[in-house]
Length: 250
Ligand code: URA
Image 1 (cartoon, rainbow, N blue to C red):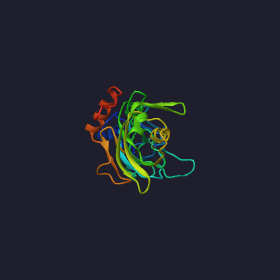
Image 2 (cartoon, rainbow, N blue to C red):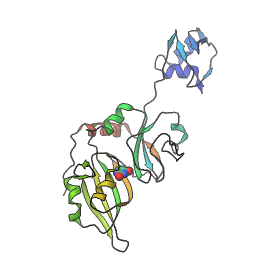
Image 3 (tube, rainbow, N blue to C red):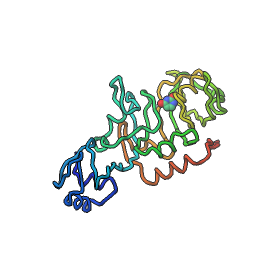
Image 4 (tube, protein in one colour):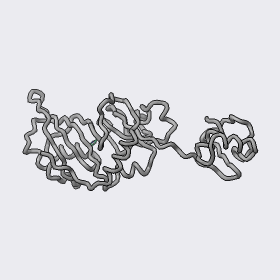
């Protein structure tokens, strides 16, 4: 619930003070009843008209970076009642209609953006958005660099093609028969990283997204969230406009 004058001001048609005047003058209706009481409380479901014109709420644009923990589902609601990324946000963000930007699997952790800005979302996840996503994958087996060739050159797996990725062996654990691989991709296909490693017979055991464009997990503990800076939002939009191209690194 919020005060009527605040809701009118949030619609962008008048300042809070002007909204109070409109209310005093009897020019405001709530559910077709004139309301002149200052501080009258309204909910999202109430219909508000100013001079018989329905007003709509202009939501503040929110851009968040969440360090998603494992065992949290990347959607707004879950029919199996699992915890969602919206459930774990601090209370202050609950009034906004936020959506996850793309998906991370239930068991994947790391950086996830959330927003209520549909246009920004399209820039980030559209088919032409070449934004780099960086992951650390703990995979089964001791990986030799030459085995990573299909990932470097692009590959097809079970009818889906994947663009070339940047890969690097971070470490190998001979004792536990596993390897830690850094991989940077510019697409966001379903189970992309897991499928790329399945294609070379090194299934992923654990996956963490450490970077989305310019946004990293740095300074964000698991489950923590922060607002993106205006500069970060601008940089992300600029990156999405650049040609889809993985930079050559040596
Ligand atoms: N690739 C995957 O396979 N899973 C994710 O969660 C993200 C990328």
